[in-house]
Length: 131
Image (tube, one colour):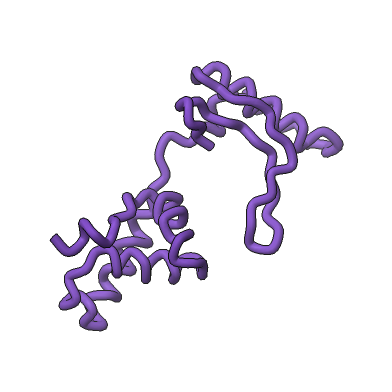
């Protein structure tokens, strides 16, 4: 989670009743090294009482860092369906994004921006969409 200062907050959370519930805040990272250390600490806490099968694979602390997340194929499929149904005549990107977000995850209109951001889309504000 990005903080107001630009740092990356690392938290342990679980999903309850369609909401993310933060169980523990591990800290805030300002560098990739700090982020890797916090992610490693988080994995250790989550897996504390779990036995693991040693496969002899090297453990890369950077492996859990997500640099980009875009569901291009999902968005393209929704755009094809949108056009096939004739909705492309509406010419309102904000409306398309709202419908797409709600198809991906049934949620409130105000939470749709989060869904779009999670799949790598830049949410369009309605006041800019019709210009």
